[in-house]
Image (cartoon, rainbow, N blue to C red):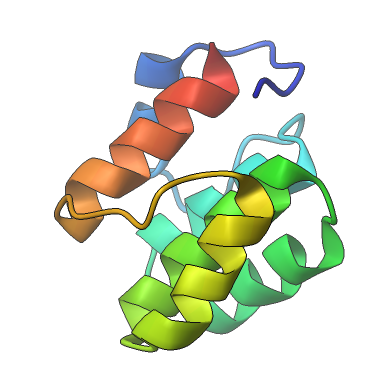
Length: 101
C-alpha cells in the first residue's frame, strides 16, 4: 500500500515538529500528520474522505486513538489489515513507513 511521495519516512516524521505540514503531502499523509499533532478532527475528516485501503487504515488508527475499538475493527477490515495490537505511537510509525515506502 503506497502513496506517491517526494519525502521518505524520516523526513515525514521530522516534519511533525514544524508548525505547518509540508505543502506536497498527499491527503492521507496529511491526515497522519494532523493525527501526530493531536488534531483528531482534521485527521478524521481527511481519512474519512479517502475511500482507499490506506484511507481505511488511517481511519482505523484514528478510531483506536479515540478509544472506539469496535469502530476501529470495522475500518481495519475495510483496509484489509489486522486489528493492531501495537502502541498507538508504533502503529502511527508503521502506517507512515508503509505510506512513504
